[in-house]
Image: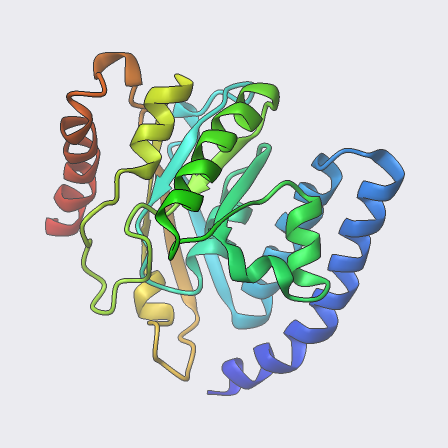
Amino acid sequence: MIRYVLLLIFVGPWTIFLASLVILSRLITFSPRPGQILARFWNKGILWVTGVKVDIHGLEHVDKNGQYIIVSNHTSAFDIPVIMWGYPYSMVMLSKKALKYIPLFGWAMWTSGSIFVDRKNHSSALSTMNQTVEKLKKSKSSICIFPEGTRSLDGKVRSFKKGAFMLSLNSGIPILPAIIEGAFEAKSKHANKIKSGRISLTFYPPIDPQNYTIETRNNFLHDTRKLFLQKQEL
């Protein structure tokens, strides 16, 4: 509970400070990359104040000059800080549209290259995904997507949505599975306390979309989800 209160006290000033720097960096450099670097340190600050440490594994599977669609399980508010800090190269997030309009925080996300999707509007979401393909082709950034769509309430892997896999097929960018362990125990969705400790982030070998087609997209999804289920069963 003490760490939860400390986080609530810390997060406001920390967000205002870093978000302002992110926006200023975009105005000065016209590039989203400095903002992405600053965003990593915003997330590092969240981990630090809560006493959570991240053990990172599998970076040997990641080409620092490569581009990936990172898919990860989603059980906790810590998932985003863990991914943002644990992936050391250029990356943007696929986020719900409502976050875009939060003063400073949402503006900083936008200026650092985050892509927003309206989950309640299927045609709008489809259009956004098509635009995302074009944006990814022009940039060198990877994108992180939580294919479950929302946080799991029991820590178990939920069903995956097709968006990330269609994006991979349409762009030719490989899927990079990233499995998070320990975040649910640190803070589940409705918990009002934080348990400090260690969270593990493991990157697995990329999955080439050329091994699949639009017709076999469900196999693409199921083969990727199988990795998460196998890890869950251990």
